[in-house]
Length: 74
Image (cartoon, rainbow, N blue to C red; front, side, top):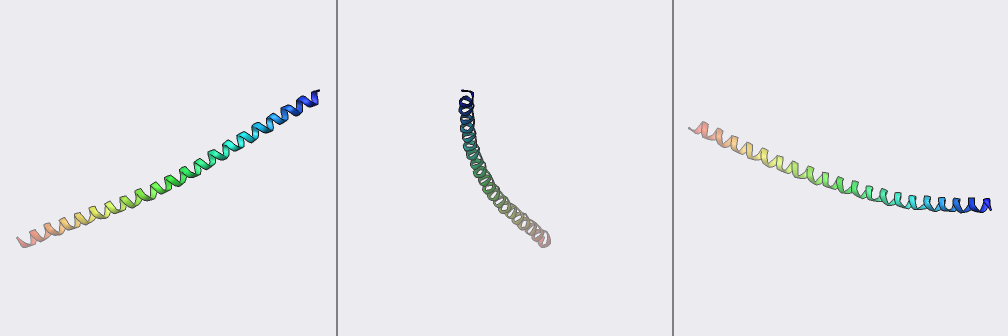
């Protein structure tokens, strides 16, 4: 009787461990997807920032050349 009870409890524990393992696998998959999304977002943000920086530097350089041209002309 005690051996049967022990077997039932062990079976329940094994079942619970399998459910936990499945849940952990799902969590790991979601974390991997989140990491991929964050990496993609970071790359996009870096590209946008670099593009904006180049535009600002170009605008600044153009403005400085125009001011210098006006100064030397006048």
